[in-house]
Image 1 (tube, rainbow, N blue to C red):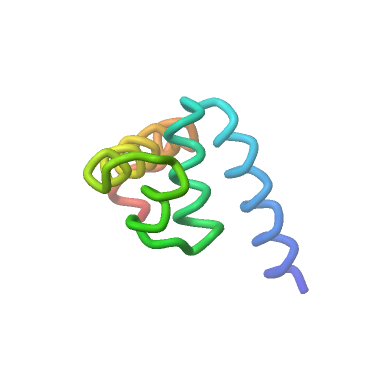
Image 2 (spheres, one colour):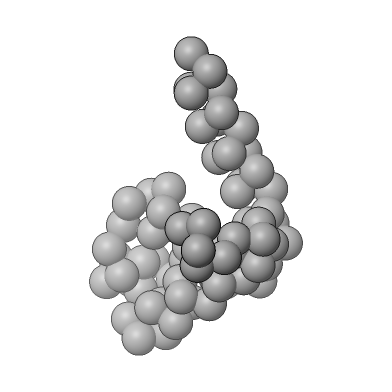
Length: 75
């Protein structure tokens, strides 16, 4: 039970931190992580090139890691 609560709290924390990064990066990252969509699907939804979506997801992850104070060692 504690594991479920911890996981829910972690998801809420990530959702709050997503609101602090650029809207385009947050949208692409949310669709990828929470929506489980592939880059091509996200590109169609956002009307962007796949390469642009890959960059948005990459930069969004980097921004989110910075907001959450995550380092490569803790991943």
